[in-house]
Length: 80
View (cartoon, rainbow, N blue to C red):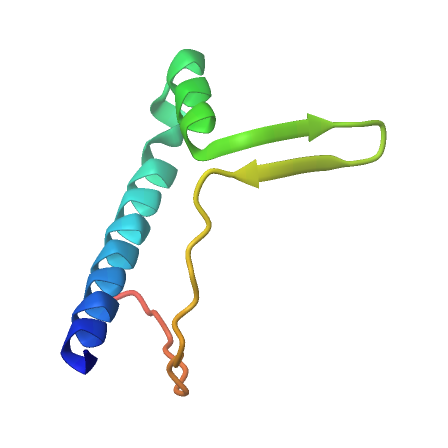
């Protein structure tokens, strides 16, 4: 059972790494996308967008889960 839990956590990490890589790529490509492509991306990642006079509510299709035992050390990302 512990081995299965470890495998599950490894898969979550791989999925998280993939999501971050795709998000970074999307961020870089966003200015190059036309309005239709941008709308398609937004429709894929959101369930609901509500706009009222004083508030905007966005509900995403996917909300990542936090690890049960998050790392205790801080990591700084720096350009090489």
